[in-house]
Image (cartoon, rainbow, N blue to C red; front, side, top):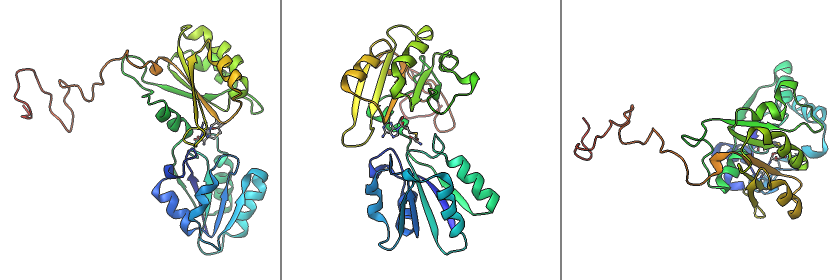
Length: 261
Ligand code: SAH
C-alpha cells in the first residue's frame, strides 16, 4: 500500500488538485487533519473506505496505520491542510516511511498563504517593491531556531507571511516595527476560502488592535509589506513591450503591431 501525502488546500473543497481528489476517490484508508482540513472533502470517498481524524492522534498512531497496512492493496490518502511542505509534520512521517521502506508520494496543494493572497487580490512580489517573500512563524510552543527570530526575518523588509502567529500578533508587530515604515500595510485573512472567511486590513501599527477587537484568535495568515499597497508599483518586465524573451520579441514604438523584428 502506498501512502499519498496530499495537500488538501486551504478549506474550499474546490481548491484541492484533480490528482488529490482522484486519490480520495480511490483510497482504501483516509487520514485527515480534522482540525483544519474541510471534512467535505470526504464526500468523494468510497463508501467502504476507512477514515481517521489525525487531530486526536499522535504521530506514532498515524505511522502505525502505515505500517499495519503496508502489504495491503491500494493506497492511503493522508490529507494535510494547505500544502504539505509547510508546517505539516509531514517530514517525520516521510522519515518513517523511508526507514520502513513504505512507498509514498507527495501531492502538492494550495497553501493557505496563497488563498490569503487571493482573498486580498494581491501579488506578493510586486516589481519595484519587493521580489521576495519570507514565510515564517513566531515561536510559541514550537521554538524558533535562534537565527530565525522575527527580528532577523524582518530585516530584509520584503513581504512577510506569518503562519501560526495570531495569538501573539501584538508582540510580533512590535518586533518587526524597527524594520518597516510605521504605515507599512498589514493584512490578516481568517479562514481563507471558507464561507466565514474574514479580511482585516490596516498597518503594522493598527492591525493587532483590530484583530483583538474582532476576536480573531486562530486560523489566520498575517501578511505584511508594501506589496499590499494597491497602486504604487512598476510594470513587470515580463510583459513590458520593449522586453524580448523566448516566447515574444520586443516591440518598439515605430514597429507595426504584431510583426516581430
Ligand atoms: N500546510 C498549511 C499550514 C499548516 S499550519 C498551509 O500550507 O496552509 C496551520 C496554520 O496555517 C494556521 O495556524 C494558520 O496560520 C494557517 N492556516 C491554515 N488554514 C488557513 C486558512 N484557511 N486561512 C488562514 N490561515 C490558515
